Image (cartoon, rainbow, N blue to C red; front, side, top):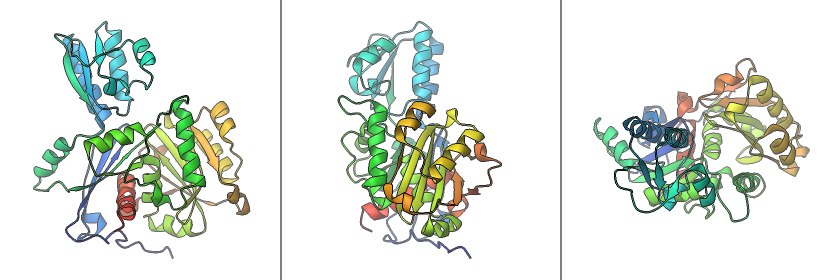
Length: 358
């Protein structure tokens, strides 16, 4: 019988609700975790992510034929950067403050080559749009409409490539994956009270929500998936957990609370057959970072040396909004507390409790 996971998160003081926000490329998955309730009864929202919202705002400026000035913080790209490019392609000017410009690229020369002029001053006639992964005012307004108060404690996840002088984005991302496998130990150590200096997107979120605990979306999804009782039982001996997000796929070898292997790829570059092959090679410890990046154009792959002492993990679970890619592979569909879309948010709560020492 699978082990039960009956409110394992309910160890905070009864008054200490937690706002967990898992920010992806398509949606932001919002959980108001209340330790007085069963997790199933915690209030939740699945709404467009800020990059989708800002992309729509930029498209309205384009339709109006006005120049655009970007302010605010570095944030996730995707829909927002696609809208910026479309604005430029329409022959309309784009300017940005230095912090906002990093959403397009960390290298100012690359930003200028993209066609964006970097300046603190908003040109005459330009419409300003504020960038940022987080809009707490909007979330508070939505919650207040249902007489729900905004919690004072925050746990927030974003996918962060990071930046370091002399290295490319994927190099820094690869270092994070290496740390997660070979140094982190307990997965909950990936919940940061203070974000690493090179993780600029996490740092920006921390500015918008001071005191928040921040995680990478991949780590949060793995932690949350283990709140599915079937996954929890399998992970005692070893399991493969695959999160198929809207932009990124994060696949891990997990034993108890330890990540023993990982690969990360753009979801748009995968189909069922390639996904199945890559997961099999992960299971058998056959992926190398060099091959994964050069042959498969992925972000990175890392497998701990000690994984070779285990038999290949047989159990595979999948979660995430693009889990349909895995249809026919007969993997377990993880849904902590019955809600697949809140997998990362439940992982954030678990990470918050560990990082805060609750």
